[in-house]
Image (cartoon, rainbow, N blue to C red; front, side):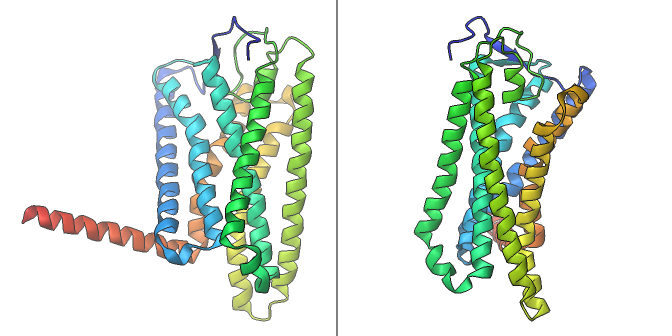
Length: 319
């Protein structure tokens, strides 16, 4: 990464230049960030503490919450700090680290969502083979594959992006470090190498998307053959949260990267990037908890136990 020794820092795009609105942006992001930490933290704790949720579906959901926590922690705190201190700067190394972790967690989450589609396919279409095909060892290996794929994907893109010579300033047209915005600062044809990697990544992502679509085609065909209405409703209720999260992630990500640069303003860039980088990690646990009765019950027991322990501590202190 020794291509741009003259660049010591990048300038991120601010949501606003007005100090009052910067403070509003800080408090808004703080609220979203704390809500995401609380919601994902409760989901992780509920799944870890309730033995009834020690199943493949909830094991993958726990991994999804961990990825969501990491993803939102990669971009939002830096943006909050910049708004609070009225600055746009991020160091060269900080930008590279932020880009790496965002790509790592985002790619791992997409791989994990593909695996979760396979989990739902086996549970509904191959229920008799579910326990043998998705044992604890298989689940760990599949989750590790998702995390590992994200790591190598991020490492490859980060090294390649920051090996491109940059000579068009240091202003990144985004509120966090992002590959397309950094490549716009390139001054040579070497950026074509990164574009080639991006095209390969798009093909792989499209392959995962096709796998998810085909899985749900088979799932819906199997569900419609279930004779009882209650059985169909139960099957749909386990699939709908996952399908909603996949739709949210893919639709916002596609809109962010496939929109025409000539017709989009800087503020539209900010809004769209907010939708795919901040909104999914914050709302994913809410989507699952609202549609899943087992998660609701586990959260209710967790909160009740916390209150009970708190009352016991207060009683012992008063004594």
